Image (cartoon, rainbow, N blue to C red; front, side, top):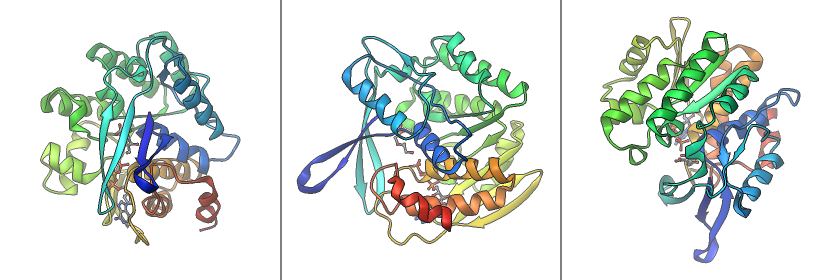
Length: 296
Ligand SMILES: Nc1ncnc2c1ncn2[C@@H]1O[C@H](COP(=O)(O)OP(=O)(O)OP(=O)(O)O)[C@@H](O)[C@H]1O
Ligand SMILES: O=C(O)C(=O)C[C@H](O)[C@H](O)CO
């Protein structure tokens, strides 16, 4: 999507972001260079779509699987800030990305070519019911073939027609995944979970093997191999804009976990990355900041 955020003098700064891309961006930053990261979506054939693709390529994320859809354009969102906490306005009702699963052969090719697949509740929210089914059945195929499937419910009620469809579809998304990475505040609000244990139990009952429950400044509760571990968050020096906190956490976590196989180490690293991201405006941390994070 196109991202608009406040700049000096009442101006708006244009960038590009969106939850799954944000995660791909951080995975690219923290994975070894030899491990390719690709983004699967649909864009238009207009100038802003060209700019968006050029931006994605400039970050090192591959665009070889991106489909071009004439007559459509990318979605757009604007960040609003209140004491560092973000909210969004959207212009995306006819975005090209809504058609990302409309070519099942292209979808299958991308999944077959990948070892790890990541999607989110926002991915599901923007698709037609038929396209949700296509996407989930291809993802289930991938999972059955032994691929890692990561899912962040990323609950955005305004993107859904009604709350029941939202809860049912997010649960189906989670059931197709091997690792689910929810934010507890969202789960409590929209699924009525009274505690993090309740979130873990609910996703566990859907057959989810691995869970990473994020809880803002508090910390992260991980459920791997039947064991629960708590990792505290890292104190943020200042909270300027929380946009992308969860996505940067996911990208950094998955990169570290894929390399080390250690979920606690991965959560500690990801907490450090997310605490840095919220000290900057927008979803994407400038590359200059990555070196310091790598050094620890
Ligand atoms: N105030 C904070 N101080 C320190 N770390 C934080 C803070 N808020 C978020 N984090 C870090 O970011 C991670 C994700 O937080 P949270 O679940 O609140 O994000 P989110 O609301 O899902 O973000 P997004 O905008 O990406 O959807 C947390 O697990 C934590 O590591
Ligand atoms: O809200 C969305 O649809 C976005 O993807 C915009 C933001 O980048 C994202 O929500 C941050 O998590």
